[in-house]
Image (tube, rainbow, N blue to C red; front, side, top):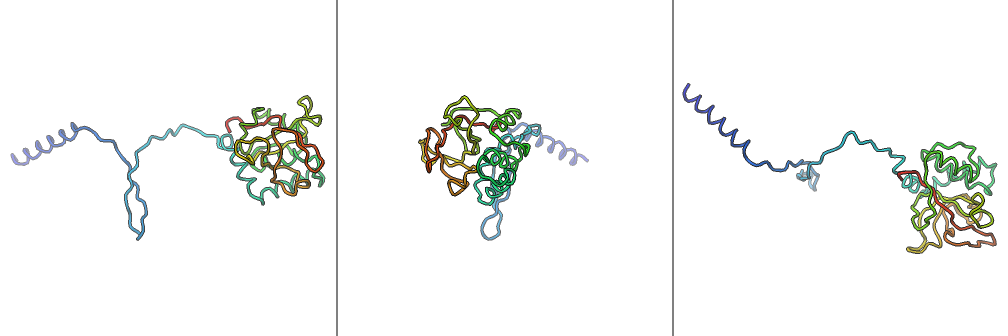
Length: 217
């Protein structure tokens, strides 16, 4: 009995000493596969996750989602096909049909009747989208609007397109865009003037006026 009592006291003292020792940072160990089907441990710092944090993915990632979607030829064809259906098979004046359909196919619920730049602007503003005239801040996936048909900012924009990237770094004259004008440029994804007025095959191309972007994108 006395021996068991001494063992108990000794065990209690060991536990107390362990509790008094300085604590080290706790790490999580996860197995990582290595050649030969062996398992090698990899140590990473343990992190705290805020489980109450909610992220509205469509709001934050729409620009990238739209850009990635239109980077694929098959998806561009799906958009133009539907845009032409809504515009009685006509490429001309189908720019808003194209932009609106691209947005619909990426989760933005716009009416099929959205058919002109003023209507599209109203729809986006109603959903809280922001606008900016700073073309140097354009990001892939931005919705762009040009000057009016008189090359000024008084009337409704003459054209709308989706910005995909700059043709040359640190040069804002021309960009890669997606729009309805495959009948003129030969493809949906093509170059277009941004910072200045341009003439393409005898047709005047208005410069950039402003962009619209979903708040948070």
